[in-house]
Length: 574
Image (cartoon, rainbow, N blue to C red; front, top):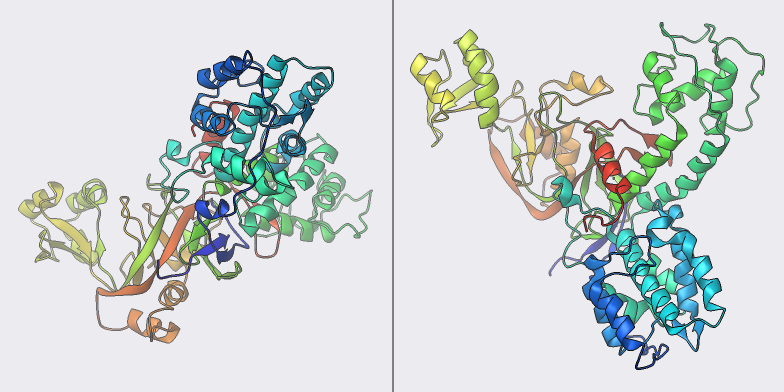
């Protein structure tokens, strides 16, 4: 491996995300975790008559004392761990629970603080188990406790490291970057004899700064949920503008101050009836954090956002934390990250700061969602053709030509053979139309200012034929909801991103990029000297560059799908 491997402290999704504050440091693969072997731990030895009972639980993959008794997905790793100990106990020594076990139980009991469900790891059951072990427990009691803790620890470690649900269940092209974490080996070498077992496990969490910032805000929003009033804000039939009366003025002020959109020191009039002053500034701040244009007007959308229960926001945070765990923990280079619900792309610096961000337009309105994946940017094409995809050609171009045979010429298209030979760029004959319909002929749009891809595209080969590109309709970037593409991702002022992507190619500075975009060489391909990872993610709760939490609409319904999978509980898809 010639290039250094950076550890990515990144969007989010995502966002995403997603997304702000990703840092990058030298990465390490799993074997590095086990470079220093811990001294062999000596657990409590079982009597010859009790060993078969331990074998019975391990071999069956079932412990009836667990909330989720069936641990078949972990059976192989559990067996490896007990085989390494000669089928003695791991967490009990001389009838006493070892300190490492107590440390792990503390993690399991506080799993909610990580956005997990503590009951998935028997959070409420551990206190009773510990009390039971203080009263001269039998060997079956010790075996049940020991295996329950082993299974719960493995479930927790996997959840905190790579999430509870496999992203491939949703057809997302994300990969943790190699073999799964060898649970038995990790516990054997890093946990069982550790001076701080909890700290060893916490090292497995995503290393992203954005993840940690979002995690830190989870208890803050849980506090808001406990303090927020249950009453709804009065709905409006007409937009309330600054200086106009609104029935919920006092309630609005209290709420915005509670969640931090109005500073705590600002004095609010408890008898106010007019929407004005600090309230307007607070609403603007709130709107910006929820993906709206900060107009300061109280319209139906803003009131609907304000009436969203705090529990929904908490769930958005937890779902985004889950998606953080799906991401590889290291990359070959600092990546480009696109968080779809946020309509934003970020270029990352090696130290985890954001080099810059760009607004983007994504797919949905035309029935084509932008995919979720990790790929590598390999080359850039200046002044590209737009090679119309077969589905668009059949479903959109053909009907246009049927209505107007001069459609091709009017929109700067041309019809070509599979070899790229031009058949016509003028009126389309019935014979040529049939060739277009049957896909024996292809349609492409000529390079230039009117090309739908704009003047440049950034290519990362993928099965969905999705890429980043410019646009011939920059006015669309003024919209709050920007899902106007067929799946590809349009970038606002793409020249900055292209120059960043080509920064390791000698001579390709911003001025040269601009000159080439506006030059006379069409379809000019420039291969990257160093490939750049690109992540398209999905996060509806993010922390932005100003350390403000932001929430976005579940535009593709992916939050609802993930929530359904998690509510179903174990066994999860991993």
